Length: 456
Image (cartoon, rainbow, N blue to C red; front, side, top):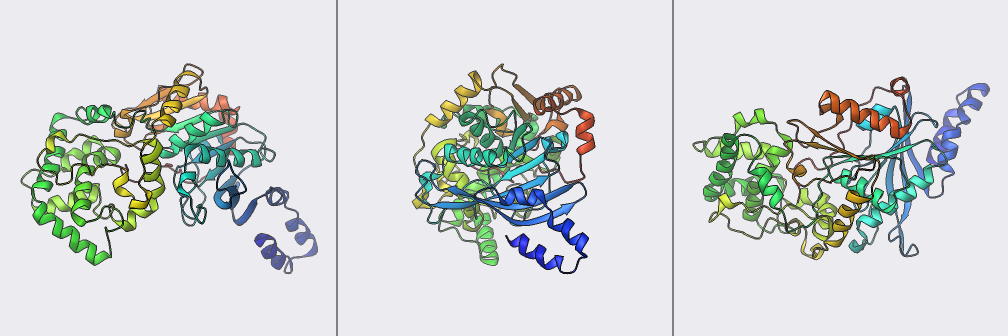
């Protein structure tokens, strides 16, 4: 309705013929006719239109009469006849969403519907019953959105997401296998049995070279050995920047330890083997050690201010998704808070919950035995890939990008694997290469990774 009011004002300045043409907007009419959908804004570019939308969802799909919330959605429109990519990044959309496209969207010349995950603000019920934050509830959000747009876009649908967004795409496929015609899940971990995390320790014991692993382990040791000098620096930075710790981790010392424990994982998640040369030596000064850890893991992350945005992730990790629980054998005797490295540690006390292993066991078994048209892409050096999904043999595939980190994608695969993955995706979408190239537009590629560092 807001757009209609703005359009009416513009029509006053147009000639009758031009005004009649501007008022005739079938796409906008169709969007406004979808029950529960609100058009917030529109941006037009060469070959596309980009809409920011909200879609009214039940807070609890099992009890739809118990309140609703507005879920943010964006639409990148090219043509009603082109396929649609449903993008689920598993987190929130940007505060002011701008036109961008996922890799599958670019490869297909497709339309794109991007969905903000429930409970990431502002897509959160008020008041919020956090027990409504489950993989089934979010999958049902996406099912309703796909159903709402199917009349407007009757062509093939492909779902995609990276990391937690990749996991989200898998869960949607599990509960609503007929909604889309294929899934491309990037760097999606499959933490089947939460406490059984030896795969992550084995990965960190073998990734890269022995020299690099030893240097990274020593950084952690040196930081904990210098705790009495480095924690005051964290406290000073907190005072300068207004950081607090009371709602989640509790103290600067606990935040310090969590950041140090995170350092090796964060390094392999977003660095490459060549970056090993910059890892500080054991003889590094306190300044060098502090600054390097800040550049890799970030002292500001485990603060109340930073963690609050990620509470929905940590809640899901604690209750259903699971999260890596590393042993840190090389740090024996140096940790002041042995039980710290858990998802619940990053939540306020009122949101801490016990873990239920059944949802991940169910999803893992379904992917292995019944799922079809699923394509998984992992990075060789990405710790999140230590526990991967194992696709069935029903037209499903797994590819690993050599030397790649958490930013692995189809473009980073070997030329042969990249060609196979691209051809598979286009076959599922019913698109030929020339048609995809014809429909392509010049937009930035969204890496879909809402988790800019290690979480969990």
